[in-house]
Length: 437
Ligand SMILES: NC(=O)c1ccc[n+]([C@@H]2O[C@H](COP(=O)([O-])OP(=O)(O)OC[C@H]3O[C@@H](n4cnc5c(N)ncnc54)[C@H](O)[C@@H]3O)[C@@H](O)[C@H]2O)c1
Image (cartoon, rainbow, N blue to C red; front, side, top):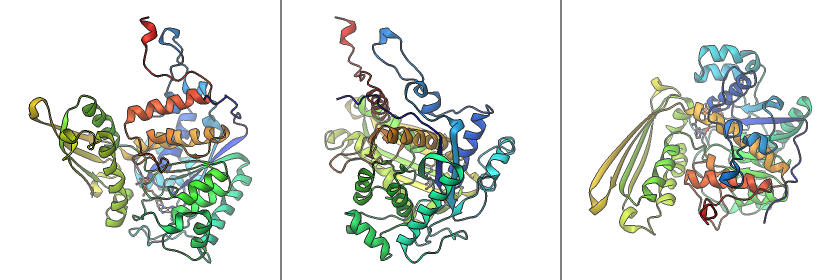
């Protein structure tokens, strides 16, 4: 069944609130400023540069995505956020050392005006950080109410008509599903009794969702990926998505692995190691935060290669992921992969990948696309988990009875077909028999 194209057009301004104003968030904000002043190109952003094929190949229809679906324009975005440090977005961007001094100077007037609100933070959930710009409250529920208050004030001050909240904060410690997440009632009771299963990131998600505001989670923490919050998202008509931006090494993994699988090349092992020296790397140096990241990174191969269906090819893979905090590299991460594959008659081969990447440069366009697509989804009346945005995540949220789709190419088809479906266009199956009949 097609969704009719009855999508409310964007009116007024869109407020974007980032939880955490560190390397990723400030690179995103600075980038939007530079792009809208035509000082740089939005490379890596599907919403800004992507096209979408419509109809038959013979029709030659391929509009820009931003002309096909009613997305908010970059000019109409207003930024805000929270952090545990009081530094302005300019100071934070300078400290993150992602952008060149030219870009920093260019974006300084804009970034200097963005000052974080006090954070809901608890060091038990991010061991390596000590916050100075932090809210006090009677209990976790009270903190969530303070966040709602912050959002109200931001909306009023900036006269925004819609808002999106996105977690760009540090990776919290590993938490498993828990009974207090089962229903909204249990979740609220747990916040009121300061239950340890309620992490700070969940307070932001609760506040946003109960105000009807879309929420995305860029880190691997559970955050919004618990039944109580997905249920509340449905009740409040709010689209949500997560977890963990798919940027460097995992992006490559989900590009390469589907290729090996498509050609039925076998695999014995995949060893991935990273060196990075930004604050994210420092936080991940704590074993409990690393555990959250590791879980998120490890799931990918299992789902793409389906060892149960192909036990001879993928039944005995050694998959290891390491992250090493190495300050000299800053945000310019190096990710090494050694892949042991085998071919015809079982003959072994090796592939080495050395990706000298820039973490936040890869993450910033993802933040932009997620914010714009979530705002679109909200105006289209879509609510709950937005699986079509899996394209952007290492550990995509999906319905409990499903397994997550990790293959980047399937994710891309799913995303584009969802846009076609939203606008009442034919879905594209790539069958193509009709051209030869
Ligand atoms: N390529 C990437 O950069 C990439 C990819 C995937 C996921 N991520 C995730 O995105 C997140 C941000 O990455 P980053 O490089 O910008 O890290 P960062 O350390 O530069 O920024 C995170 C910011 O969040 C703040 N923070 C922590 N807890 C908070 C809280 N409770 N409330 C408000 N602010 C809080 C910190 O003070 C810090 O300024 C991390 O969790 C990281 O794992 C990044």
